[in-house]
Length: 262
Image (cartoon, rainbow, N blue to C red; front, side):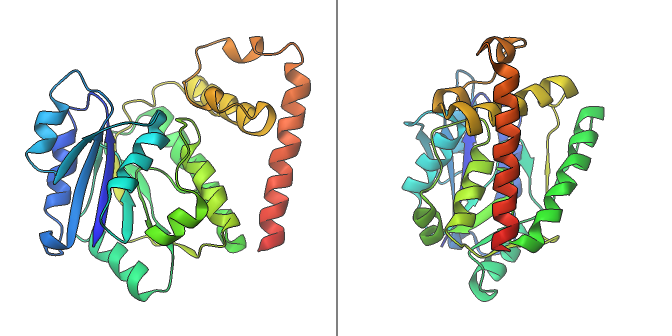
């Protein structure tokens, strides 16, 4: 069985489009389940999700990563598929994932994430994400949370999602790589997602700068849990620029490790 896991928080405006695209997949409906993990919505997200999803469960762990992890723990399938509540899926999406992971010999698969309502910022981000493809020959695949699938045994072997919200997909990608999971990027496994949160290029850059800062320098999980407010990064430590140099050095060492494995 395939388990599709969707974290959601106050997504009443988008959740039905997402779920209806999943309910209209080419494979028989009884071969996959849809699990929505609600993070405590105050709108009609739960009620609307319940009309299509097999289960709507309450989030227990913290962060987006925690929500995805809750869904994985509740899943009955041996293939875990992760997506987002504002994402739409073509009819052959699950069929292709099933084919790749059951007959292709891979543990993980992913594909393009495009935007159905592009903004200037989202176009820049889409272009920036193309550099991810340069890492594929070395065996590293940066998985984007709205579009990837993994065999449950490989997911467990890698330790699953951590309870963080920033870089939770990158973190899992690193650990799947370290666990020597076999991954493939397939252009047929494509989704359309919303660019509604991508309205400021500088703000998006600050988000990732903060994420890398905590991921490679402070190691503080709480720093990867809450999205930063403008100006907070420079105030976190007086030696910020020294820390930034250290972070860049550690990022560089990480990519050297990837290339060495490749």
